[in-house]
Image (cartoon, rainbow, N blue to C red; front, side, top):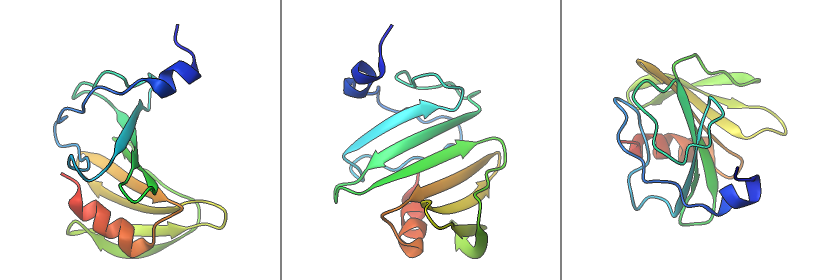
Length: 131
């Protein structure tokens, strides 16, 4: 069984398109770590039946962000501010001491981008790049 220190050193398998799921295009990031919300390590790309996944991206400028995809509605504590993202209604949620979150729905999935290092407009711009 692999422990956390060994898993952190393993390069995840390249992500395959999973139905209508969204991911940052190759070249938009320097590293990605995938975690299935079921708790599996995510070293092997998941099937289309996967309920949810978290992708932690390291961008070329050194900042990180977390993309969460789920079939269940996503929420973050705090007061939501309505925004348009990818032609849909979404919400930016700022909570003291927590990363800024951008939450929206693209059926059949719900998405959230979260980062402590990005502004709301930067998160919206990153969401627009998802493919």
